[in-house]
Structure formats: structure tokens, C-alpha cells
Image 1: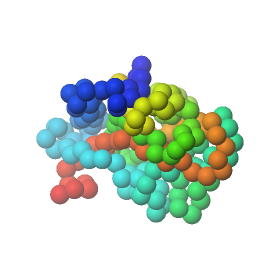
Image 2: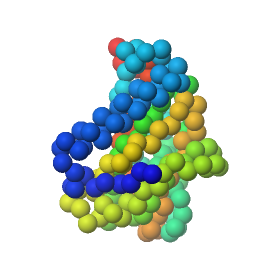
Image 3: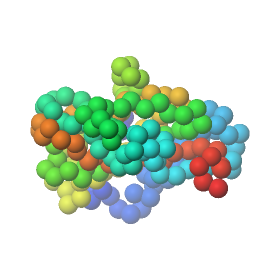
Amino acid sequence: MSVLLPTDQLTLTEKARLRQNAVMGGFSRAVDLKIAPTREQLDYRMAQNILDFGTAGRERWQTANLAAINAPYSVWTTLAAPAVGLTPLLAVTKVAVFWGVAVNTVPNPVSLLSFRKGVTAVSTFATFNLEDLESQLVMEGYFSEPVVYDLNDVLNVVVTSKIATGVQAQVVLFCYIFERKGDTTS
């Protein structure tokens, strides 16, 4: 079970170890899924919303409009329809490894972050209490264990609203994408 660790409470060594665990886990999973035969044939990079999650013109992290309290809202939207959340399909050439989160909207309008799978959220990988970050200097945290999505998974990642602002919130997910060398970077 993964828990949210506020960045302010971690040492530089602990932060590096948690990021390294995400990297090593991503390489292992990508090789296991035969995205490439060996680790040396793989690259990893920070996720890009348009390229990796198909956010149609929105290269930033914006939730759907928070219209009601205690309701789930996708962390991905399109520029044309900010009230509609997305459940992107991960390409057959990629593994996504989420390792942390930052809430950039003040005051924090969301309470939970849930990583679910499938359009109808058939399973939940992890849920994090974002209110744990509110008493920190920086509203950012690392996951004690990374959350991994395999190739061809439907990503259903949502926040639960605690304030009905009627507008979007900026909840930034820290995610590495693992793919064959040369697919995105040369």
C-alpha cells in the first residue's frame, strides 16, 4: 500500500531513493511487457500531457471543472471541453509510472487523488489524501510506492472535490514514461 509523503518531510536522499525506485520499477515492468528486450533499449522521460495522454491542446495539468463537492473529477481535460474529464488509453509502446503529486491551486479544493483503471474504474490502484499536504510549506508529496500503468491500460485518475469552485484545479502529477529508445527522443 502506498502512502503520500510530504516533500517537506523528506531528505534529499529519501527523495532521490523514491524517484530511483520509480525508475527501476518502470524499467523492469517495460522489459517484462516486452516493450523492449533489454533495459538498454529503453528510455524514460517526464510525461507530456498531449503526447502521452491525448489532452487535445492542453499541455498542462488541469482537472475538469469542480462543479459539486464529494464528486470525482478527472485530472485530464481538453482545451475545448474543460468540464469533461478524460480517461486516456496508454499506447501499446509505453509504461507510465506515477511517483508524486503537487497541488498548485490555493486554497486546495480537492481532498483525494485516486488512481483507477478502466473507463468505469473497474479497479483502484491507490488513493492518496491530498489534505495531508495543506500544513506543509510546499503542497507536494511523493508516493511511498509508485503507481504503474501498463501498455494499453485506460487511465482513470481522479480527484475528489471538497470545494465546488465551478472551475478547474491544477493538480500536477509526477510521472515517468518508459518507451523504446528513439520513439520520442533521439
